[in-house]
Every structure is written in structure tokens, then in C-alpha cells.
Length: 195
View 1: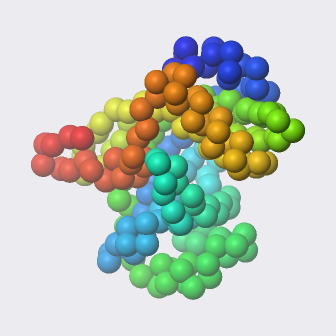
View 2: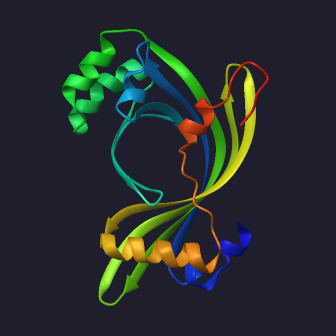
């Protein structure tokens, strides 16, 4: 991770560095609605600020996931579900979830070192976040440590984002992780097995 952080192809585009503490609880309905729609419902403490997030995966290609993501400040998951339609989340989905029991599925606790990269190449510009996450998953009394690197598109030229991501992956021999944090946390069981 440190080698990647200090890489010239990262440093030349880095405009900001920040460190955040994250403690996220993931929720689903009794009939696993979010699992079925390849989505996620999360309440995360980000540096002590409570944020509710709803995600829906639209497509996944070559370990790159295209997701709709909506976030609002909220103290509880129920409050978040009531507020999320105001920022574009599907009203019908939020209403459906609110009408039934919502169950905590797992947690992820980690520290994120986030680098904001503003990449300019061939008269195109793109802003992205290169994040280094170190922490652990919790589910059914089981714990598994993890560390990962995540590159997230923020805005600008999408083709430039994909080109830069491929170059970063090739130059630093990065191995794509096909499963999200949620999927890996859900793979933990209470039977003494670990991922």
C-alpha cells in the first residue's frame, strides 16, 4: 500500500489526503430483499457522523461495479430510509423496506486513508478517490481481518477513469477483488469457519 501511495503515477495527481474511521452496519429484510436485488443498505459512522446509504448494482464488468448510490445523514436506518427518496432513491423500495423488520446482517470496521486524484490526460479530466482500507469484518460472533485498495470514480471523463485504473493495476501488479466488503463479511459464519 505504501509503495502504491508513493508511486509517481499517484503522487503527480494527488490533490488531497485524508484519514477516516469507519464503522458500518449492513441491513436487510427477513426475506433478503437487498441480497436479491444485488443492493446494500448501510448505516455507517464516518468520523463519528452517522450516514445512511442505499446502493443498487446496475452492472459488473471486469471487477468494476457500476452502482447507484444514495446517502443522507441519519441517526438510524429507519430515519435514513424515510430521507433517502429526497436524494433520488426509489420511493417504492424505501417504503417496502420500512414496512417490514430490518435486520442487521454484519459490520465492517476500518480505517481509510483516502487520496483524491485529479487526473488530466489528452485534454480529459477525471476526479477519483484512491482508498487504502485496513480493518475487520464482524458477523455472528466471527471476525476476519482485511486490507484492500479501492479506486472510486467521482466525476469527469469515465473512459479516462477506466484507462487510469487499468494502468494502475498493471504497473503495480494489483489483483482485483471480485467480492464487495458486504459479500466478504456475509461469508463469515458462526460455526467456527472463516473466510
